[in-house]
Image (tube, rainbow over all chains, first blue to last red; front, side):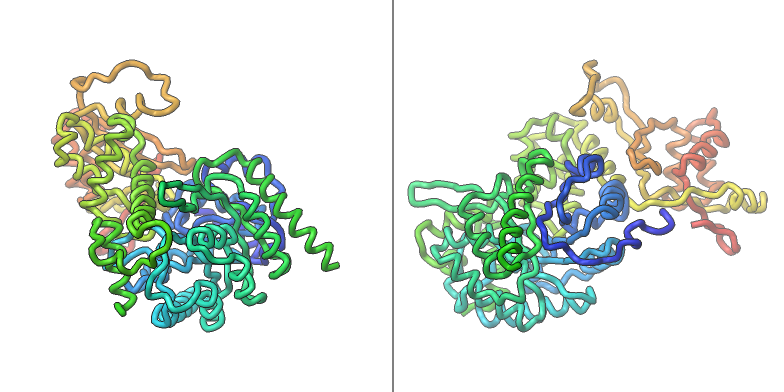
Length: 291
Length: 265
């Protein structure tokens, strides 16, 4: 074990109001060798839950050069199963070791009766679910000793039982639990197309102060004879309609740290950096207008 | 109105078990059918879990082909659901599953190749450990050396197969320049999978004596008993040299001496 992780010199700091990129294993060496000019990096927390080995070693070396955000995909915070204490302990350990500026989870569930689907499933937007989520998010924040951000997911079905809109549910959750919001603009667009709501209305319903991070990504359209469905695949560039919605989001929430996510059919690093710079340009426009 | 838990139970059953009798009526009617909408979640979950298996078992996948692997994965997922939100924990029972998976019965070596890949996966994510300080070891009184209980590095695994699984593994790497066909009858292998401080995982074929020595130590045997097992397995085994080599490489990392102040973790 090395005496002291180099990251301890940096401290958590904060995520700069710039665009960052999702760090994936395929890009470890390229990031270390080329140090791309992006504001910050985000990783999936669970990819560093191992006790040792290359992923942690790379993250330690890369962390020295970039502010970091930890993004969880497996906590299943919206499940009615008990919270997985071991999972949380690993997350807490990771937070202590790498001192991320942001820690986020999803407005979703992924397990019931001990069986995991390892996917981000939507919740019914009921009062019961809201109070459950408020309690769970509070419990997680207490255990981690810090605020977390909650991200809206793409969804492919809506529950008959939902009594609230997703945006009102998310806004009230943030208010009651004291968590921040990670607004995934692509997910808003995907869900809006899948369910036929106005994505601008979603943006208007989220309180300005709650949004601390924005996600952008690409999706896939599956077409059938009876209609089409957009799938949140993170396998291509951000589409023009999502860039337009992003401009609206930056207009409403002010310049906000923004992440380019790409998970499958990963292109070379330069493609992600270019997408990040496109987001930077939109953030700059807003900065300039505000000045 | 069903409670949140019941809705989640029915949703999961519809996705994982294809049991949609209870869930479709909870899906708001709009455009696409509930069945199509559920199918997205079935695909997502299956692709995620299959992807996790493909990441751990690339050689098994290459040996059986993509189509067969996906078919086997679907059967595995149905029989062994994921029990963790961390996908890296998924797939540890695949070797045992393949042993009893009838369509793969003709590939007797496949479960052992899968064992090699699971060991590699475990070693890849295992903890670091400082090497054993030879000075501390030397300070143990000679009369008590036989009572020492050594432990292996967290990133060390032992494997034994009747098949040449290391040759099979090597000749099925993407960048393998080894085009020599593997003869399944060429003999088995006893193997150490180990990740040294460089973090690059190494495979080391072992003599009978050192395999039995390391296995006895990993099972918690006292040093004297472990040496007996090693010498019984291979009477001409050069025990001091081989054991010293494994200490020097960091494979043997720690020891306890019952009822004494000596220990090194």
